[in-house]
Length: 83
Image 1 (cartoon, helix red, strand yellow):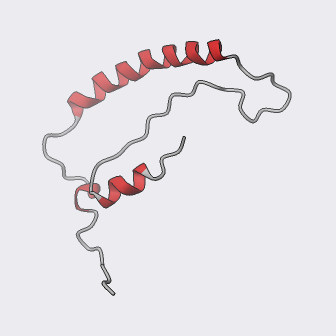
Image 2: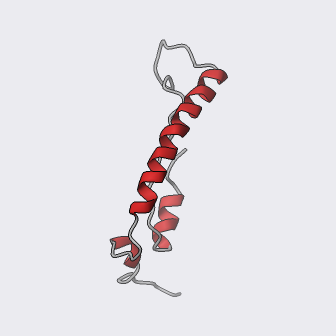
């Protein structure tokens, strides 16, 4: 998974955006390491969900009610060409 096209679209819509990745398969691309099983991926995903829940419940209440960030006005000086 990538942050594309989500990051690009969020910017175009002036939406604040952050990526949170849940890594479940640590062996990808490592030569000589046997692939993990489906059960290991599911187990890692479950462990990651606990951390994701903690992250979201700590970050969401800290978000400001009024945005004064750069993404809120990302298109203010954009130039559009109509042909």
